[in-house]
Length: 336
Image (cartoon, rainbow, N blue to C red):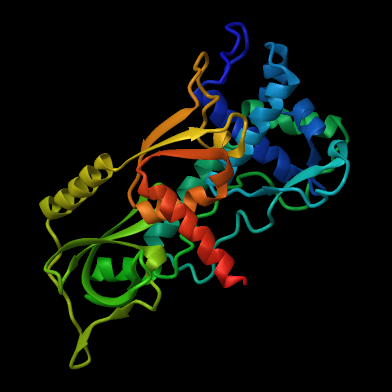
């Protein structure tokens, strides 16, 4: 990776957050979508970058990285006319990005908290530079979308069917059973006392006491392949004593220690999708094409890295290469 010019404008973390908000507001504002040229002319952060000496090529890389960042937060930007000439391609946000998930149930307290959060968001979401972006779009003749943009908020979505029943069981201290698919494909029935739910690197994880194993176990919700069933004895749900704060804290500590021991090191192709995904162009003056990070589950990591297989070289752990390769073989076999 070549070093960046010391005079070139460099985004800070707060600059990036504001830029992503500006980009989201602008794309939501337009019903037909916006071309890259329109975005570069309307979003203050992009305009400032150009004025600060950023080249058009660097600005394009910044835009590609921003799309990846938005995707990682659940905001999908796509091109409905991807076959058009590059200057005419428009970018839009998927219609269901800010839609509540089906069957979402909230109690009165949760609704009050969301109402308060919505008021705070509506007061802050379109102030300062974010609002300037919309003003510039109007000046360019871009028509606003029919829906009201004021106070939009990112969706709250778990994507995991097991989340709601597990969360209820945690609140009511009810034992549950479910079928769980291990990384090797084996499916086993689990009988647990659910303790807590955590989001680790975008993946929902259940911490629980496994009654058959007699110890605390962690389960990825994405690997639960059946309905979560409450355990009943004589038609009465089996309840358990709520875990102490010390027990919950110890479970989290053990998970953190496990993750700290799992280290992945990759070499990444410059300016590739993986390059932007790992933010290797975020730091000025670095010449490294290597990224090192901790992970929770090796099989899950292999699934996530499969999309970047042509852009990365695994340095460690060595078995990660085998898992990525076997994943491709399974996909090919399923479509044979």
